[in-house]
Image 1 (cartoon, rainbow, N blue to C red):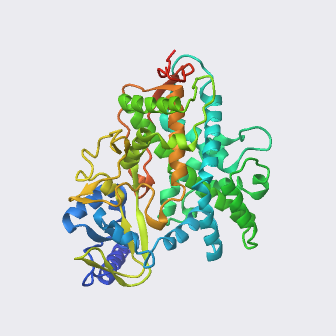
Image 2 (cartoon, one colour; image 1 turned 180 degrees about the vertical axis):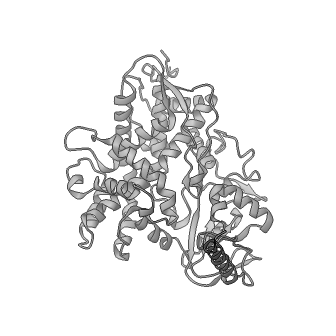
Image 3 (cartoon, one colour; image 1 turned 90 degrees about the horizontal axis):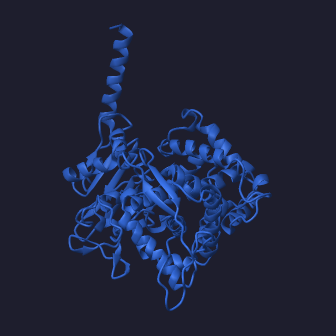
Length: 508
């Protein structure tokens, strides 16, 4: 071995020794500390391979609360869902906005936002809820019908084959884009949508690395792809679009009030909203579709519920006409919502993060307090709760009626004999809960309603069950590790007979 190699190995050994010697030490009152031996990275590599397995292993060894060194950060995990309310209510000392405010600009390429603008942007999210949701729902319904009718309803007979995730992606991406950002000046669909979607997927594949803090210039062509995506939303382009949602119009107006924002900065903010609109909704749609198609009895139960709601509302459904389901009708579909909740339980792996604003003692319950240092991350990992057999019987199984009780959505779930305040958390918690969650669930409902009403669906034979890509653990809904092949054809249904002698849908 050369002298230079010996010198380098010696220096590396001294560096590792120095990091271990000067690393963080556990103080009295703090939870068990898991550091690892790799400088800076700590346990990040092991955590990234399978976060759920990693946390469950250390929960058995250290209990419900422990701190892990992950890529330069110290993250304290709270693994008992009965303790979640204690964390969520500490809005002043445990802040979410600090984390989001640092990560989002780096990820999506816009400058850090001044507090005054940030507050106005936050208020704009109210346009995704309440009465405004009805307008968005109507628009999304029309755009889903448009894309499905033009791309998938042209052939009147015979089975067509497709890849399920690609199918969901193509339909939901374009329909959501049209609903949020509007239509081109001429025509009802934007040209180049496939290329835009392909670039979005390329960016999204790098999203976990960007969130982890890897500089964009180290990720190959990612910056060029991101710049191209941002360019799609430059103000001079968006000004030519019609039927733009009130939500996007309000945000555009806010950006125009701040001279410090360049056109490219405004476009980057709009691009961030595109990711927020589809980044988790599309994989959530895929899993809901996959679990229903994988369970024909569940699919038929949900399909019948949709027909029942239409019939009771006096709607004559026919495969030859476009269907409009309003917000009130969607709210009546409890089995469909249960199916979506169940698929979210099985596929979501989000991590709820708070940043400690000061050194303080965090009260967990009547018996326990926890020493917390300023700058530490406090993390809830709901996937552990979602897969807890003490809360959910046979948690690995899909049950379409798991969230149904006495004909209504079930909200009573227990652990150790105590009712859980939080039992399903795919959208975050507290003040950091996703403001677009109602719109997202409505989108998925609408897509599935149209799919089940207009198509017969089957999985193709001789393929393995869908598995999850563990590389996105902690970031939301998992993507499938590989796409799933399926078959679909038009499900021909004649008009429903409405009145006292209604007999249900007539299959032709």
